[in-house]
Length: 81
Image (cartoon, rainbow, N blue to C red; front, side, top):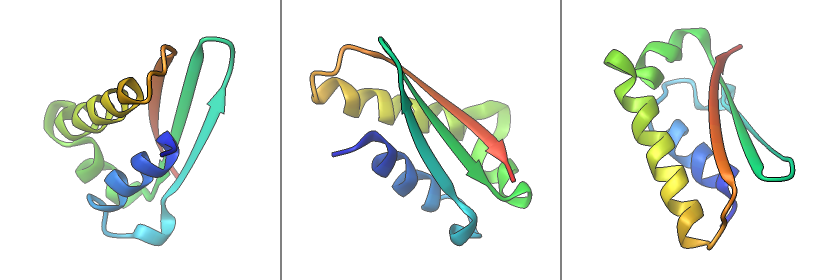
């Protein structure tokens, strides 16, 4: 399963404006960057208090990458539209 699809599923389960969510995956040598774009109004619920929700999403994405025997560094960025 693709990391961007897993990330998109997790993000859409948290936000209210699901149609505004955009997830893109960029791969370089040893780095996979996943960029999440969501509505400005959904950012507080996506980040959570002290970043708890964002950290949980990052943890799940990194854990799923480990099950795929992917030994690259994973970076997940959250931005508003």
